[in-house]
Length: 353
Image 1 (cartoon, rainbow, N blue to C red):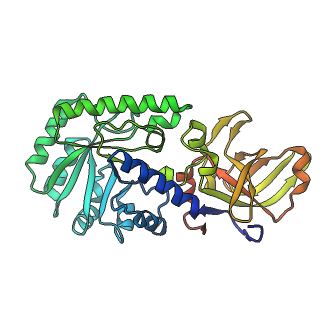
Image 2 (image 1 turned 60 degrees about the vertical axis):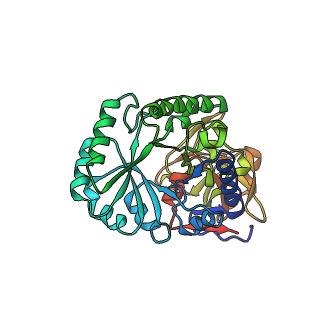
């Protein structure tokens, strides 16, 4: 890949690794008799979506109605895993007319509005909070759940499907054991709901628990997304190996400071995001990897992205290595959070096939 000319920050996508990650999660879903409804907010690409189709996936998750509209060009079964924004009712009606649309609700106000404004039928998931405390109903609030279900039953345009949850707190774990415990606690809460609503489907989704756990009792569907790329955050918490990470940023070297053992790259917060990790070196925003004929290899020990501003990135380099780099070359850097990086870089991506 030494002949790869990088003029501006560019997201490199390793097709072989992506497809291996997809196949791994499909195999896991099949092993546990689960529906895999992958979250497409990570890659946001019709081309990568086709790789899922090639493996037989026919249901997807997105994080916005705008994203649902984009993917509705080629997908007809879409869950919007974000609290329903009633201000987008025109888009909801447009989508519901042409695809099988699933919406997320957690309050009676949204149900009332949908009941009066929908022109086509939609499927409803009630989102429950299993410990992340971002969105969702307390699963013990049976009174509120019953109120929502009564209103759904009274509408000829709404169909209740089940409950879904996102254990986002798993991303703050630091060991596979912590991830398994979070997963277990989520399963316990969801199984409590099944005692009241045995007819409901249960959908859960996050990459750490989907990657690590092997107990999916009572679950019908999983919705991981980040696994298609993985990243340094997933590696740190034990969800993947470095060799599983399928995206990297290629960033031009624009300045070298020998006295500080630092390289300045064209690649900052507007390219990587400002997500960061704390590791043995301190705060890092990415790790430099060896460039190979195809893609990239091992992490270069002692080289990491130590700070980012809007366009600048500062890379710490071992003193004995600083003179091996030149202005105009580029570095290959693994991102901390591939979802954010891919979103920022979707106009500047290159697939390595």
